[in-house]
Image 1 (cartoon, rainbow, N blue to C red):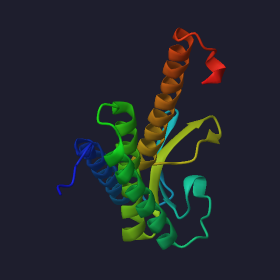
Image 2: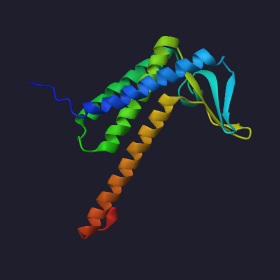
Image 3: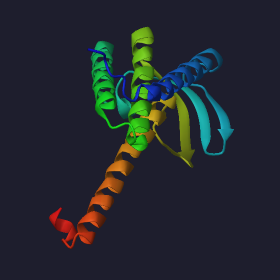
Length: 171
């Protein structure tokens, strides 16, 4: 019985995210001292921060292996979802591939360093958004694609129900 490798062609996107994430983090580590910043634009700096927690440094008291196991578990789930997903639904496949690449990019940091290197710092005046990295951006864009696909699917089903003569809220 042959294993079906459905949607495997999307893994190039995951690999590209992991590679660009790791290269960018290494460049930051080599060129910016910890806690220093490099001003790029009036609203954008590159900084060198170490995030030992999850998003926004939440749960920073947890050991690195917790986040490694979580990232690996999420990655396995995404691989299963991607394999079972219909081939033609590109937004979901791209979203899953982006999330997978981002999750594994941050897992690599936690295994190698015990923390995640964050370096992108958007700010306006004195307000700073939480620093993040390319892996975090990929996860956010991937989640956005999944949400967009769900919204579009809901709209398609609603339109189909209306064309069949039923009320949209009965679907």
